[in-house]
Image (cartoon, rainbow over all chains, first blue to last red):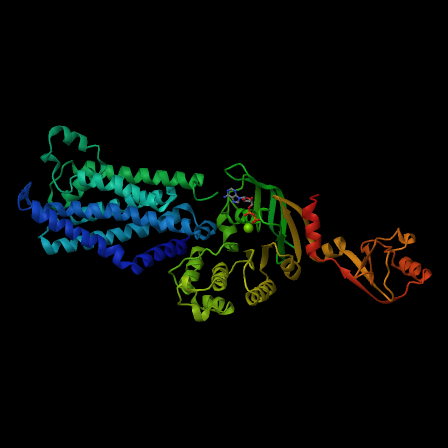
Length: 253
Length: 308
Ligand SMILES: Nc1ncnc2c1ncn2[C@@H]1O[C@H](COP(=O)(O)OP(=O)(O)O)[C@@H](O)[C@H]1O
Ligand SMILES: [Mg+2]
């Protein structure tokens, strides 16, 4: 194992975030606050409770999920795309480092950053509403697995993309709608039966539901199923990355 | 000398179907300076990138220090430092950090003292905290060299190290290359400047259209391939060369003031004695004589013009 190399990439990526702290932390936090104010107070004044939880507190897990999904993806995608774009990737490709180690470095850093972001948003939300976390360890597990999986997805996008606009397409056109429709702002049980069934095809539902369960023990789907699904996504992402490196897809000519 | 790189029958066909390397066989010896000479598009960068693991060969095998570059890539890549042709650097990182990053990437534990030494040897020390984007092109080139040297490689690839570089840096670079060789580093450089190969290399390989067309000790190459010219400065200019000199390869230059005799320095009989005798028979007197050896450049142009 080339540990110094993993560490070098990890540190490089963390430093990049540190330099652009405003972008990497402040803007997701601010937009979460805005969601919180707009949805929490505007809708919260109509819907006072969902499943016995105040509306403001109810949306916190979904908001955190929403942020870390998009941030994990865009962070990891940018992290690997940028060296490809500038050409500095030559150095990583010529270094004595395995595909697994490259992935650990880039994905590990992107996942750590969004994990930190998730916790910062949680702390911010705590200023607005009282929040209790019934299963802190499971909460952290969900957070970690989600950050990791979606950082991998971002890593794949960063390798696939051949232009900056493509980096944005998936977070914008896929993840954002799925997160909005995945129960960030409402409980699935509030939907008509047909849409309840349709919603089960939305992978984000399982993430938000399981994550919310770790806070309040309320869930749209069984928490075991949520855990199973996120593990499945993780396995899928790892498989695709393994294939990319096996074939040298888009990294080597 | 021991071999350090063995390239056997390597081919590379790019995705579009263009064959950039054709049946390359090449051996690099430990501790030598090898210049890979060839015009633009000959395949120099492709060959280097293949050895370094950036480009996948379509077929053939490459061994570095006895290790296969695909199966034992950790061993082979640890030995190699690469200075790429393009100025591809990070922008926001500081010089010191980017060089430390390279060292880590190659699996070496941090060593600030060593990095300091490398930066000082490249006159980069006073720029160590500067973001790379603030540096000039020449300075960026130095940073790339520092990055390549950061993990103390035994083999250094310099891909067109002096292309677009000012005279001062070029001199520094030559100095550095000689210094590294004294320490035992094997150096492979590509160039299309003959001057560079002539000044620096122990051996020269010529690549053209994806094929290695010649590999030779530089001195031997010069001696063997070198056409020599004897310039005879005449006392009185000649209007034409008398037909009785037809057996000699002669020409007149400087309005007939110089008689130039081209001969092959390889031959036992250069014909010089016979020519001088013949001149005195015809009462053609001369003031001075000198000889010129053709440069590597002329040899090179000759080779690339008519690939063997
Ligand atoms: N990624 C690539 N895809 C297709 N063709 C390429 C690629 N890289 C280089 N080539 C072609 O291969 C040939 C050799 O290129 P290169 O190795 O860069 O030559 P040199 O370094 O000697 O100038 C050129 O004709 C170039 O256009
Ligand atoms: Mg080149």
